[in-house]
Length: 313
Image (cartoon, rainbow, N blue to C red):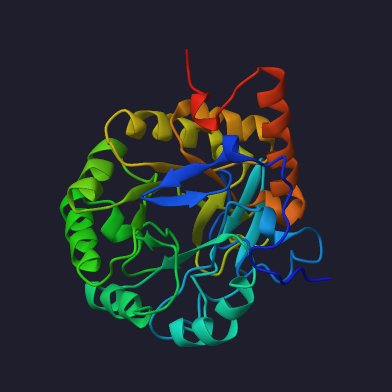
């Protein structure tokens, strides 16, 4: 059953010690859902109370509807999965009308992931949300499975700074820029986003990968390449969060293989303010709640008074 009382009861044990702040927006705890794995949360509301989440990040939203890539779109791999969905979505107006009202019933922050193929498309989609109650935007310039825009913008420092600055002109809502790991120097990209006015950094998006069917002698994915996610990419993600956290002064949402509370603690120790759970939601709909409970238990065991005190020695 849906718990549809925004601002209603949530576990008081998830108290102030778990609060984190991202660009002036206070989250009751650092556990967020990753874009592309949760959508509005309708399907998960039958498993747990969505009020307990720190934030929900929705699937990528574009100005106009996107059809996505040809099938097959997903493939299992060792330690993860490949996806080449191509950011299929019905467009901003459909999202605002059909999904956002459901999400706004709950006492959790809403992060809208924005996607586009050109600067104009990014500007158009953020303008679609003018006057709409959104807590944070996540600017997706790092998707590895669309042929135009996306990752191409997020792999060049000058373009990253430019697109960030342009989008920021059209909103007063904080903008978190989602970065691609498919670069040789993640720090230069993160610093460029900060220079462009980013209010936060989200990393990492998926790694570009490929799988071949040796019997059919052809790529498994219809798009040939796809984004690799899951536990197999976590060491790369932790390394990049660690590097970026020491190079920028804006908060970081860490993601990439977060499946357990231990993973979440590792990201926070590396420098993340919050952590996003992605692929783990598919295997275990209760993953976010188990991670939240584990963080609480860890803090009790180690006598940690505030989540921000979890750091490397």
